[in-house]
Length: 584
Image 1 (cartoon, rainbow, N blue to C red):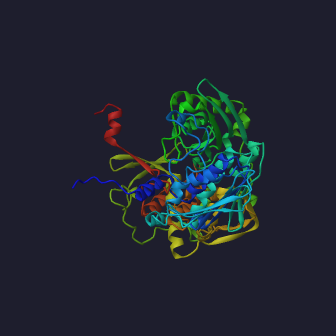
Image 2 (cartoon, helix red, strand yellow; image 1 turned 90 degrees about the horizontal axis):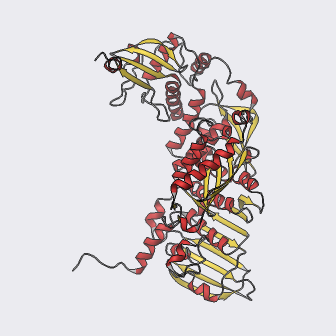
Image 3 (tube, one colour; image 1 turned 90 degrees about the vertical axis):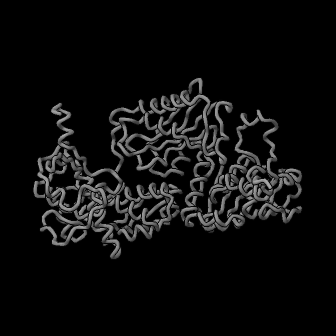
């Protein structure tokens, strides 16, 4: 008997469904796009437990008649494609029955639909790919779909889902992106009766962007409009000073559909080169329009990625469009600092000598200080292969500092450059870790709570982060559905701006995709705190303070990199230096 066998139809459908339905957010995206294709301009999405328990979508679209309902759950049934050539001309998201077979293969779907002008509608129930009910029913014009028991036929896939708050965050992201491309459509997203996102109809795209990405984007957006023979680009980008710590604010829509494309992201960042701080990313909501035949939207099962026929020409179009928008800024506008929205008292505490900050921290027992005597406790062993630890830096001679941040040492047949900020970051980070192992980080209550405006996506993620932030000394409450209230901050000698920390952690958490309770997320909070409390470039340290810094560094478990993974030091062997002078 041969080894090759034909898979049963039921298994084939489950495998195909897995390519489209990755998580609850995939279901939300597909059904929301179906509603838009049906001409709906008022759509309500309701999710329970991040969509893992149930997803309900109600729209006022065209609905379906009896003949369409009968075919809606059949695979490869469509109203948009008649021939192979039509694949290259489709501008809609899909069709009412396209996603339903995939979803119904791994879940239970109940659908009520009534065509415009029809006397009555129809009720259909499909469970695990099998139709269990089909009958005429009374219902409003439009379509209502409820998805429950997601991944009931593939329980292994359900085990890989994240926490309820994490999955809810993905659902919010999916709805937010689609709402940006359709400002003329009212879209609401509810969770357990609570409104998470409410996007009313508007003709002002900038207003929709502020609603989705956060109110702080108001007044800092620049219009983009540029066209070439290859494509046309339009939308908005942020001023250089209004950057963020990750690239989640860069969103691309190709012919109205959200897509990820590293080439376009590179074009945007290339346009900002020299005008934005290293490690920061702008906001950008860009709409790329080009002939359907010049872009392949079918290279990804969920259509999340695209392929261009002339990628070089598209790249130059985006680059030129963003550069033109930035060119309209005056030098003063480009460098104008973002208005400070935080606690003025906290900001004032950031002034002062770096050495004084370090000493006060040691007196409070949270961070080591320069002025105390070396501990008699043996330092932890450095990781295998590390060049620090065991008194390595203490054995070197300190020669001075260059560029305001790099400490110069020599000895052991080498010259060593140490980044003082990164080294201090590592020390503070590990001390925060040790303190948190013994209990919550000490905190102080703000006399005036600080308000932070959040986008719906940020709000959803932050809800799951509150326990971790509380352990880190940051107590956060909520006001309405778009505002966080910071009530307390860590008891540190230099109080970092809590709003900046929260935004950084939200962005990094979304990229990690971890449960809010996971150690990586907690480490991101500690890394942000350490970064803002560490000595900065330009802060002068005496020779004795440098020596104490080195001793503290040698007590660290991982003394080779900062918490963000950058190297702390670079070693130049004498023989390498001699080669530069052609002595060898």
